[in-house]
Image (cartoon, rainbow, N blue to C red; front, side, top):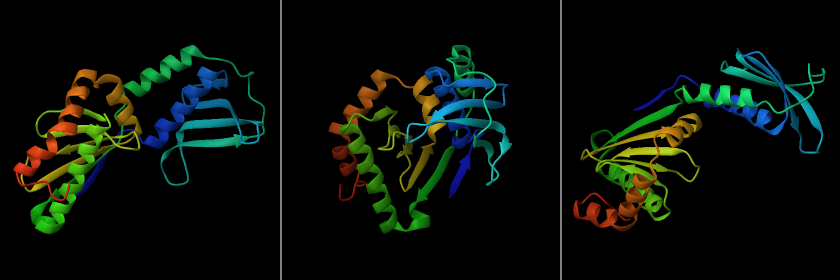
Length: 208
């Protein structure tokens, strides 16, 4: 079963991040709390005026639009540190998307479930070897995937594997407020050095 719970989409968060980057880099022109005017360098070195509206709905129904315009910006581009701070703090308070999937031996059958579980364990072991684990409490592991986004896998219930995939905003806020370097080192060391042996002894690591 798959569910996806969020209060802010990664698309909308990404638009705010683009405004933040423009404000840091001196490409910010104007904003009123919902609509933002910035300039953006294109692939051919030209600069285009951009209007980002964080309150309007786009073509697929999601909140947030980005439009390139020919009309002049209200003021010349500048660096806006206050805007950076305000928008960073705003994103800090948001909850990003997290997709949840539960795999069960009963639903998928023992053969398919074991392959899924083996793949998840192999991914976790590789994350440990590459220092990408973040936290492990004996059953639930947080680690960064190759994409840089966080995956949480709960291995604690026999015959069940629960997986939560964080979107970019959820990953940003976890790394900013919850990541602990010492916990990350301990988790990575365990999964790099001990996990494969332990899970084999439990009879739940297959072909890894």
